[in-house]
Length: 412
Image (cartoon, rainbow, N blue to C red; front, side, top):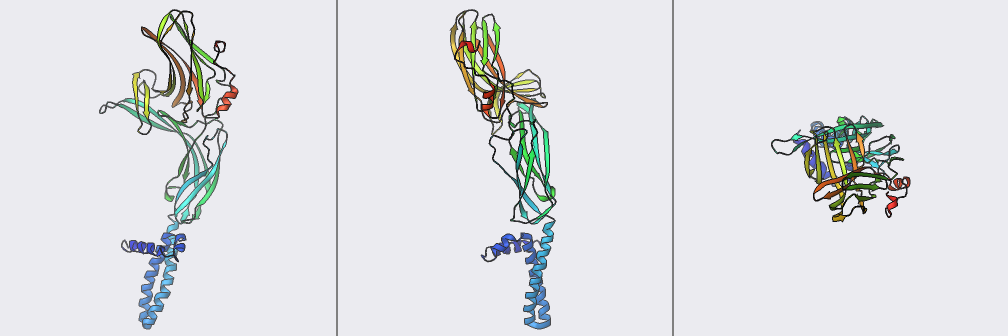
């Protein structure tokens, strides 16, 4: 049997190249065709032997032809019954293109498409909408390599399922589609493609273990702008004997892709030299688990997962601080007592699906930091948290009051 089956498969491949038979063989299931060939050959031999025994040469010919036809029919039927118990399909999705993602409270509609690899029966199935969180934390140093040993937890945060696929007979070469519609809850965690904290939404097809592999497709869920939060201007400051350092922002809610404009104000209480004035845009990923370290990261290769950074003891759990952008505002500048100095800056918020979010397993926050350094003194630092979302940028602008940065009165 192990020798005959490969031979019949080769003969079937040759026959399928014949122009008259190829349309039929494209529709016919492979197992049905193989069953028909096997039954036809077996019955041909039996019919020829029995016909020759009773009627001689003429009987052999007539018996062979008649028996071959019967064998093809019976073998094809046997092949169809065999494949009906082992129907295999590939599954994927037909969805409307949504580059901006799906919003909480909205709907997700589409079709699940089944492409049978062989004809047969399927017992039915369901489409699942799943949200998973991936959380990475530092679990000490690997003694063999001397590098941090990272642990990754996976949490299922949300699941919805729809039993939209009925039990049915499917035919190879005849794809079928089934519609589905998910109503998204008002409160959803957004998609986040971070390193230590990541949130992924995906669609899955579950057809059972006997019907082939599970199909999946990632979707994107927006982080919507919080209504009435972060719409007013903010001003934070810190003081020392040499003076006051102020960070002023027109608002604290921004969409990915927007330009954040701000101002650093130096109110000197005495004459001094500032070796550097800078503004930083930071993204902070925090996991409550870990060995209480803060990792300051200046470079990351997303393809390899390797990054450049400096680890320092402190904090609770594991905290990764990413330098998203920075602006050098002044170097070696002399400031005099009573002479206020203003330094404007702007940052382009990256569009990478990394909004602000918070769960019990980990959270991501964004911060704007102003730094004033002196040659022989401690740095002065002040920071303001901002909320980053992935919704439409114009919503935040409509909610925010008009605030320019051209005059001193507007930041006082």
